[in-house]
Amino acid sequence: MQLLPNQRHFDSVKELMDEFKKASDAQNLPFENDVNKPFYTQDEGSFETVLSKKGDKILIPNSHSYPILYRGQTMDYGACRCSLYRDTHNEVAIFMERLRQIEFEHIIRTHPVVENFFFKNGFRVSFAGLAQHYGLKTDMLDLTTDLAVALFFATCQYNRTMDKYEPVVDDEMHTGVIYAVTSLDYFDFGFENFFDNNLQVIGLQPFNRPGSQKGFAVLLKPEEDLKACKYTFSYTRCDSDYFYEKFNKGDILWGKDELADLARPIAKQSIFSRKTFSEAFERYRPKGFSKTKLIDSLNDFNIAISHKDIPTCFPKQKCLSAIELWNSVQVKDFCHQVQHKFWNEEGHEDNKVRKRHEFRTLAMLGETEMLRRIGSTYKDTSTAHQEKIEQSSPVVKKRKTSYDSGWKKIPRRYELEKAVPYLDENNCKIELKETVK
Image (cartoon, rainbow, N blue to C red):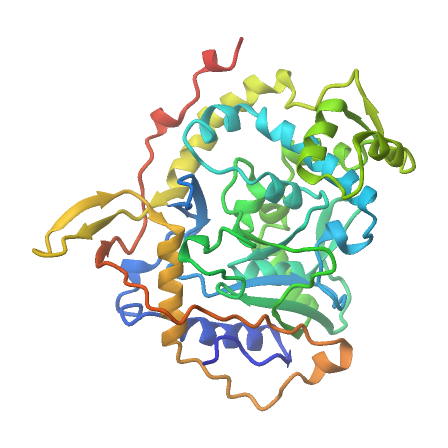
């Protein structure tokens, strides 16, 4: 059974994209063909509401399948590790970044749309995922379902000073890197853990970046590398310009918003409140450290804990404008983007429909992806194997995945194949009296 192309160098972007399309199409179910496309092809930029094992609502990038996740880089750094552990394994330095994550979380929690819509309606907010997408160091590594998004990050350079992405400007031939992970590579026993354990959905959040990037993430431990297949490819200035313009000069994927402005100072913050410290200590206490010892050790990194300071919150003076923006503009887009696939149970004896469910579950997605894997007809017929990759750096070895050999019975059900909107704009608007106190 083959699910991904052989690890190797591609001579062009088109060659790479064509091969991955073949790999993805080979996992289509029988009804997913050109004739039936109108019935299962999802709306561009939409998200399906699915339920986690705990019952909270996750807004996953809407797709008829999730066979492959991608990551794009302009350079091959060898080991592919998360930013939190990339430069240091010092426990105090790592805890310092955890303080920044907690501080950032306080801002998100106090945003009026998060407080008065997302939380009240049971939508999951990924605090670590947002921290990762807005430039803080975390134990997550970004992935996406969209190969074009990964190719943007592989062909456009990040300008740290300007905090933006730029296309290459010379006429040389460049080399980019694409990592590919099949959706079941980090699968743990029990379909209920699909996309809800080490491999997670970030999806649509109260802020733009993760949704625009069709974001997923994998949680990594210290010194753990991404388990994936790695490919290099050649690209030109023309290729870089194409993806740069496709995503509106990068603004669609890396747009500036109020959260980006609030995250930037936290990345350099040196004084934290006692409350922020206590929350971080409770969640991420370094082994062998008491609070007193940890505070003393943080001083060596010029980090101080203050009894007077309070955690950073979303600015109160901006709450009213944030609500007005949500009610007048954002809620309309949100209700169009957010969709569902309702489904019906089938009776055991008389085969009659028994109960309608409004949302699919992550476990149901996992069951379908397992069927795709079993039925895959893909085979890479190329004769070039790993030629350029082996010359540049060690190949990233794919994780060996095993599955329970026992049988799992999946009851028959009827699912809507094309997701549809279900939210009412008026019901999603926030009343000003809820937040003005």
